[in-house]
Length: 420
Image (cartoon, rainbow, N blue to C red; front, side):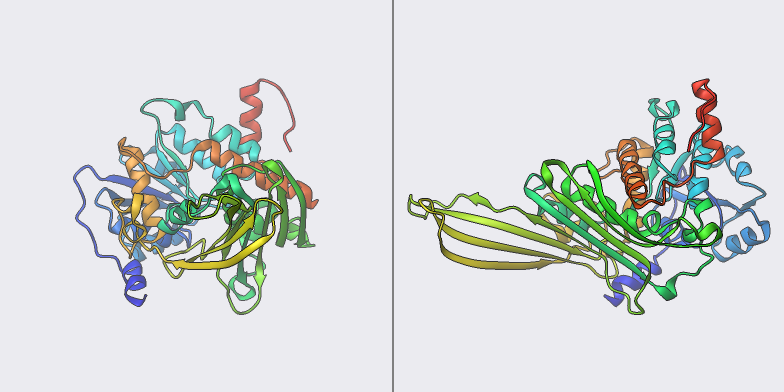
């Protein structure tokens, strides 16, 4: 484990190709080294070329610390540079929409921190921009890095969404990991625990069911009470109804207990009859399955996939249980090769973080190569609809639409409408 994590945080520099894609970063954000700078070191087709921040001094310090050759005076200067191919946007949620739109219209490929935008209204506009549908148009990806990690693919291969009747997903950050002035607790910046950690949990439900929720049945929150903290949830517990009456439950907090505990998702299947030719004609074999992925966000540090199968031999005549037993297995898949089977030949190393797996697919899509995993625009829209659904049910209301988005919607519709 130590060697794997050491390799992830100290990746060897890889020689760059002559036509490597050049990235510009909008904002000297703390997440950038983990999400892009480190992973880019081992990708031969990526060069981090420039950074810009509202405070140039901060950008200069960031560039020096991370060996970035250029510092731009503004975000727009990054977009105006024809030498920049791609843009990474790790800004506050409320700024995602504006700078994603500006980047796309400047012809840049965009890696956009999650959540993609502030609400579904913005998502509908962004992911349906006409530039994105052009054959040689820009690539836009919501950076749901964990979904590219091998453990997620293997977890999903162990479940049958048709038979899943219940999914629960939990995550947390200890109280000492956040502060009152964090952007997560600023309503004007589209903050809130559901927007921060909860978006992972909501995506886990959608992926396990391979469906979108029909209704948010309940959403209990602990909100702030003053100024920009009001309407921001510090923790939440939400319950959703999915197709066929299935239930999904999610919980997270940014003010959790002192000791951190790993995130997880558990998918519970209904009991189904499975074939067994060795049984007498008047008996049948029934299986119910529960699959849990521990460590759904940063699987490289630690994760485990537990599979629990409960079998029963029943009488077909009266349904009585003749025999019952349980089989349990655990798996760890730090690379696709470890996952084996259909995944064995997919690229990756045990020292790759989820961000590195995501970057591999992003570059493949930009280059026009095959991608094994992706987060589509429609997927990102559905994700924001689920977040809106929960915020509306909680009573806090959806996160505010930016002035840029509201003006853009009004201009393109030709109607002077107010957007909440």
